Image (cartoon, rainbow, N blue to C red; front, side, top):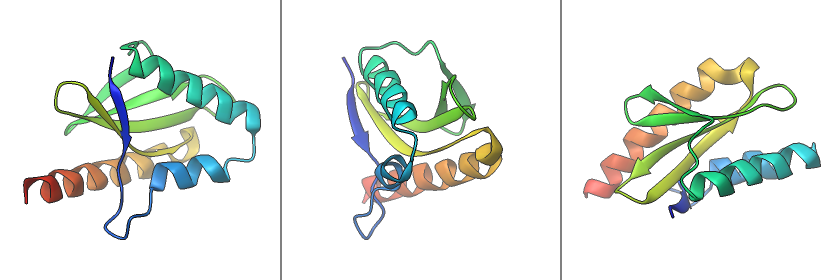
Length: 108
């Protein structure tokens, strides 16, 4: 089993949780939560590494939702941010920046 954790900005804000709460499609929210639960059980079938330590979890629903995460240690998955196919390129850059920030602050 993997522990699911959330990346927090320096001010304590949780970008992934904010995105999920603002998602109006309740069915999409449920599907995303199911995929994250499966991820916590080691099911990485809809994931692919993107480089620089981050991966993308693809949700085949609606506009093609994506959840970006990094693996911290052996059994911790850190949810960074999320979006859909239309914002994918920008979201990947944001996820990489969040991951770098997390590693920098964790090293202190």
